[in-house]
Image (cartoon, rainbow, N blue to C red):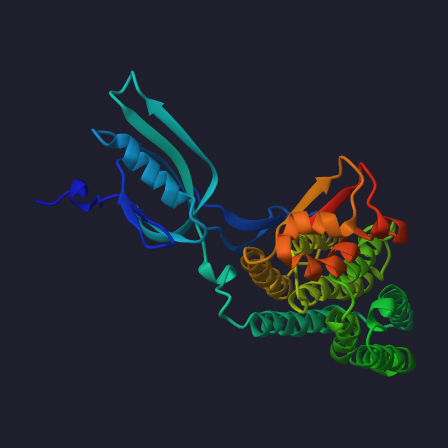
Length: 413
């Protein structure tokens, strides 16, 4: 009669290049987190738990190699673990999973105590490949689809929650929207003005909101779409990625840092949902800025991914605090679509970063001429690097003639 021992599989890992190696193991386990938020309401017994899915599994494993060729087997396994990309873990108990090795890989060689045995300690993270898709996929369509889903969900959220039943509430809400539009106009106009088409659309939408605010208040859904268009238009400009990311980040910091971001009074819900419209859409501005940019360096792509994720984290914390304060329940559609768009653009930026130039730096130990230094760094191809090198290091006219001793300079290979 078959028992549990018959259901144990051979343990193996197949690397991204397709090389499959087996290993021995000891006790096994996995961890998996449930994504949930607990809402405790005043004067209500118990808590409302909002579930938001679950994480991938984490498989910590001790992989054993022994025998006459243990050292070569361990070295080979260690090599495939460090291949870049996704592999396949055939777990002896928990099945077959798409994984990526994560964190530290620890190696121990028991030359004396275990008769020439190597132990590799590795944690494999189960991963959804679509978050780090192949560069053959159309990232533009994927990200735009996620942003469109966010726009729809966030507009519906505003329509459902805006309380415009009294003159006071309408006036307060109108003031909040116009103040937000004014801040966007002030913070993003310089970016939008880089191209004539972007400038024209940005100014047109800005004027339509200011002129038609009383009409738009009757239809919060249309109002939300106008605000979203206003905020997202500069993301498609030709301004530098750093200028665009900074412009959106500064506006987000202004919203998160306001002393009255949570305040008492009957207009709390209107004020929060109005600000959430602006804050959440500002994050999509960063997403669209990243996907509409031609990155040249690995540092630039990874930096953009880190910036977008940092702003999403700040937004989530700010929303959770405000939802808890006003006693409302986050229905989740809006933030889920926003999170998906950030995940997609993060995967895209990480993927392309492997193909981009790596920043290196040099500190001069003596005065150098620009041509002499570039010839040393780039060889016969140095002439094509002169303009990018001057721009990257913001060289002055005097420095172009002679680079001083002690000057730190960046270059890209």
